[in-house]
Length: 252
Image 1 (cartoon, rainbow, N blue to C red):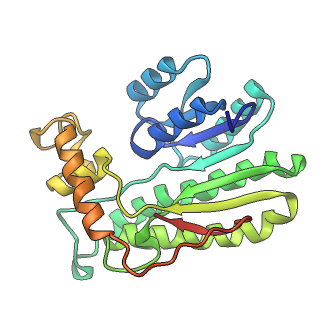
Image 2 (image 1 turned 180 degrees about the vertical axis):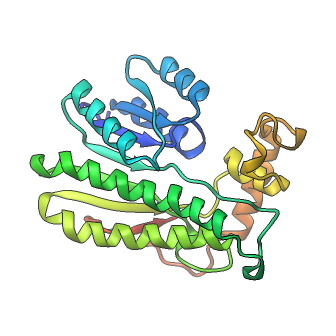
């Protein structure tokens, strides 16, 4: 029970990496607030983990909703120990792959969700963590935020921004005992990634209807994991662990 007594907010917590993290945190004893805009999924997940989880509808692009999310969490639990900025979008996979076909509106939307959302989360988490001189802020970046050629331009730019924002915020908040880090997964077989592999974009709707395929099957997820493992196989690499990690991007 490594998180016994801790209170965490997980944005984008209704599915994928967020959903898995919610379950893991609860298993380790945390009280978790699931923040998302997918009400049906979020409510069902919270009910399955009750009383350790609560669902709150929150659009991370809205500062008012982020502020209310933080305030509600503190009023319910008396504290906030962990914020996991996980909400994000990949963008359109079938169009605008070339910089020549750059779509400014799509770029703005992805940056608004992926970067503005994380920055607002950091701002309002810091507001309640600084007085306690304790806390942990984690954001989901991507290997696409560390190198080029792995994703669409807007998504790649947004994840590079998350890495930079993490480093800068860590420098500021470290003096208050607040750790700020990000994780940079290479590929996880979530519905978002599987749908991109299918050629189905987020704008087409949720994965139950996307391209008429239905939700990703276990077989599809296994195929995606095999593909990712093959591409991401480490050769001649040395992995080092550090006792203290602030402002780091942990890639996996």
